[in-house]
Image (cartoon, rainbow, N blue to C red):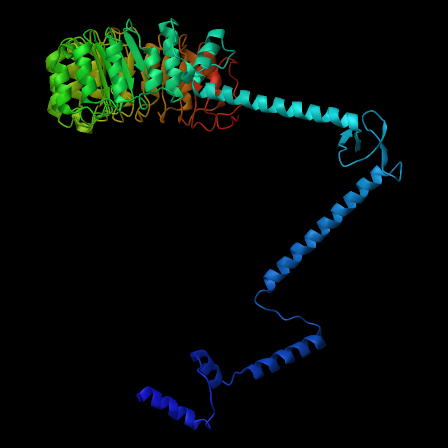
Length: 558
């Protein structure tokens, strides 16, 4: 027998040979302290006796909760009593004239018996019930009112959607209605027929916006005589269907494929073999095409004839691909876009651009893989060669650029420039903008300027820019140019006018308020779209023209 069991037997013998069952540690502790059920019962009876004598209640730990519950019940009781009183009052009104439930209609004054279907309403300050006929009429009016309210809400949503799309909500033409019907029932359409290139593009854009463009609906837009095709959402178009572009449209000169992640090597190889007239290729997201295929495409006869090449969002366009592009068609290129190409990681590839490109009209180099890949020297060198013919310059996200390319590149070499975009160039300063635009006589004025998030530009630089291009400017974005003050807009009001400006974005310019909106409405008579997201001092109280659409006010609601 173990030592532990022997000790237990000894303890049992010492306690007057009483037989006890197993006990827990808590039971043993209470027994040692002299606490047992009898003592607890006696203490409880004593408490009850004192309670009866003194008329007091015992305070437990949950008293606060008990008091709160009691208060809630009391309030609920009051509400029920009030409700009962209201019911009694209603019954009194109903039975005012007749104890059997008869009443007079508050609308037509006809005597009737009130039922559960009778409608209660207020008329001319009196509260009463409607007879059966008047109740039916009132129900129809309520239904019509609700329907009108729903229709008005839908109309407001359409107006708001058009506003966000920077469009004007108006009664659609018969042609637009037909296009909408075709777009909604595109799965049942077997042939579009001769509807014209413009209408075909409209339908294609609507289908792309609704994510309805797929391998089946795409075939409706294919025609052997077609020279230009645009598909703005190819995410639902299979690779085999993309091959049909070249098979069914051999005369294509321009192809635009957006979100073309399913386009792969075989498709591009087929294009290089079949599309002998291809001159412009615009691709967004062709990440399945590898480096060797790009090189092979540019080495083909089609690749050598390219005049426009626009490529965005792919990591497989490598330095060797860019070199092949420049070697084969660099001298012919007039339009070039290189945007978000993470495969171009060496500066030497970019530095080759000035050695091949000679007659560019459109140049976009945006969001390079690293900041140091695009510097002032490269852009100045490019502009010194192509500046005479260059009309569009987009350098968004090239944050390594500074005032040097403005003063040493754009100012002396770009007389034909009409569009300039420098989004996120945080090293461009107020002084650099002032030096660029002050007395810039070789350029007649820009038409489209985007300075979004150029956070170092202030009043003087922006004023010099508007003073130079104010007469020709059509679109302008000063989004997040936070150093602009209210004095800047006051100065514009006194000295400048913008006769052609139609779209302006001054979102997140904190100095803008209702008076600034009134100034812009007055000095830009053709301004139709004004975006003010983040300008929380602009309210619905601003005095603006009725034809000016203000987008982004916090006080606006649908």
